[in-house]
Image 1 (cartoon, rainbow, N blue to C red):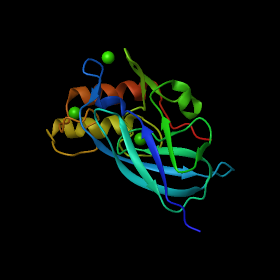
Image 2 (cartoon, protein in one colour):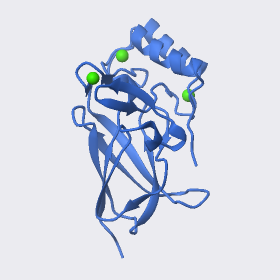
Image 3 (cartoon, rainbow, N blue to C red):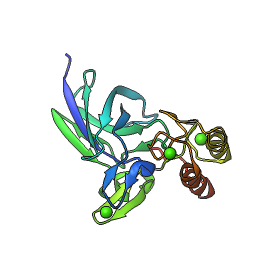
Length: 184
Ligand SMILES: [Ca+2]
Ligand SMILES: [Ca+2]
Ligand SMILES: [Ca+2]
């Protein structure tokens, strides 16, 4: 039997967030995966949606998932893969907020993005999506900065459609701190 279910996700890509306006620089695509709560935590279903720059929330429709408990995995084009801290119940319309506390993510793998209101973001800078932010990601951004690349590019972690020193700074800082995906 097929189940139509919806998961509302609240999340912030670190580099997109402005703590003065409390908004993101752009609304952007987010992929949400529902994963089994049993090792090896296989993907059961996935959905693509838009994370709104003002509400920080997107709606994701799942058609292939029975009612149950799933880990939620977030994939954004240039952020570190981030999982929910625990399996979440999916039944009808559910919601999960990755911004309210670092403990919302598996391994507390979130960065504080604001104090008023208190908000957490997932780390920006995994340009090549290999699960870690390191020198190769920094190098990609530096290369695009050198060539003044603009547009909807993965090296633009601030979401202003330009590769510049601000992008390098964010990725470099996360590389310095060896930010990596933390998964069940
Ligand atoms: Ca603020
Ligand atoms: Ca990487
Ligand atoms: Ca930028």
